[in-house]
Length: 190
Image (cartoon, rainbow, N blue to C red):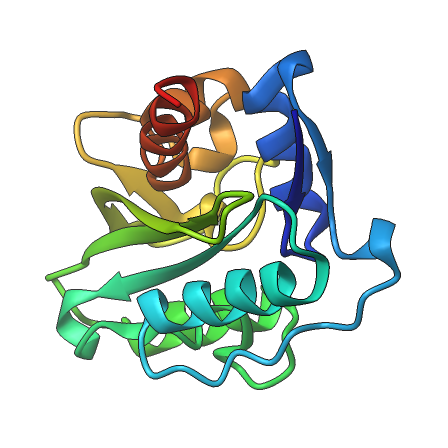
């Protein structure tokens, strides 16, 4: 089955292709020579819908998008929808450094990753799948795998950050992995 994934992010595309396996051919926005789709929503759900709806209307093919945010309790759920551009630059190091700076002296470091996947089937019907993983922000970066805030996010019940885990292990417990399994169950049941 062919799917369009409304992302330019090569890390997300790699993780999704890895999780979906050979049963699905997944094209990203770069494969279609598409421009970045502006995320103008006020929530993770709205941003996911905006991207998937844009691609479906343009190509009339089965497509999906995701939007993910890191929500830190003590910071009123920041960075949230601004996770990718929290420090303004869009650079991962800057985002991580700003978050760690904003948490200096805070004992409450509870956080959660939230992913919303919006899927439009070939008939234009859309479905929404949510994945949430709770954890905490550690004091300094650990690990080299993954991307984004993975080096400072330790999921509840684990000793390692997402960046210290092999991709297969991370996909089993991550927010994106949870939403993706719900999405896949929907695809298989059709």
